[in-house]
Length: 336
Ligand code: F6P
Image 1: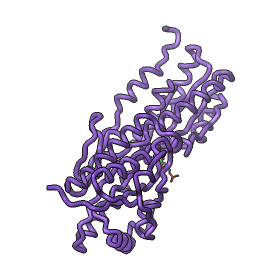
Image 2: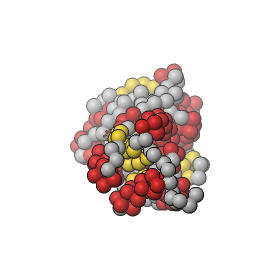
Image 3: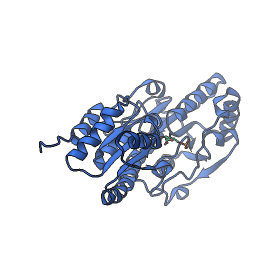
Image 4: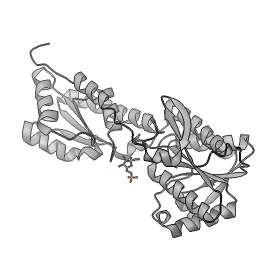
């Protein structure tokens, strides 16, 4: 049953991701096209707590589809974790007359959204929320894809290609740390795309001898004189890995931590297009009155599902891709 939705809020929360602006734009423009007003909440959930908001017009989101970061700013809010913080946020929702909120971010953002909606219901308020998955880590269980991942992969690949030039010239080993505190998607996809000698991910226990020493030895015996080791930050420190390579193999690796550079930059075609479709779906699901939802991609299709159910889902890590990487980095000294 369609609900009469008059005004909604939109916010970005948690770590930023390229394509968040494209999602904000899609939410605002879809709302306006459906006769719904839109309020931008600044600095994540803190914006609701501190009444930090701005009216969004169609032109307020002009010229942002191509921009990294988020025009609404983002934050992680400790206060919002507490019922007292959420009570303040609900006062702002009442003041603004919000019927729903679109929250763009990761798992933590969605849990906050659900807690807010539940607390609203306890007070007899009807406040529905919709999550849009955006994180460069691609680690949201219910969605195959999260906004920002493709751009972050491309940024890391561009940096590593540059490193490769100098590593090749000097016949060196490079250890590159990419983001992914709890997930190895970025490291694995990037590792395949740059032709890495080895990739270390948190989803797989490290066997230093087998995963690094042996691979470098084999590569060396088959004539390679430079080696690229890609490490997800959650799999260990690149600095420590570099030191250990030096101790055990006697070569002197150069260590690069790509860090937050991976979170910025112009969003790729995939991120802009996915964010636009997700933003549209988020507003339509609020208008359709489906209750608390999360927008997801399933095999390239953008759809929405129950938020609570989505939060309980786990995404199987693509270990088949790790096997592909193993095959492609395989060296058989003396054979071929
Ligand atoms: O956006 C996700 C992520 O990039 C993680 O991979 C990383 O550990 C974390 O954010 C770091 O974010 P911050 O420095 O903002 O706390």
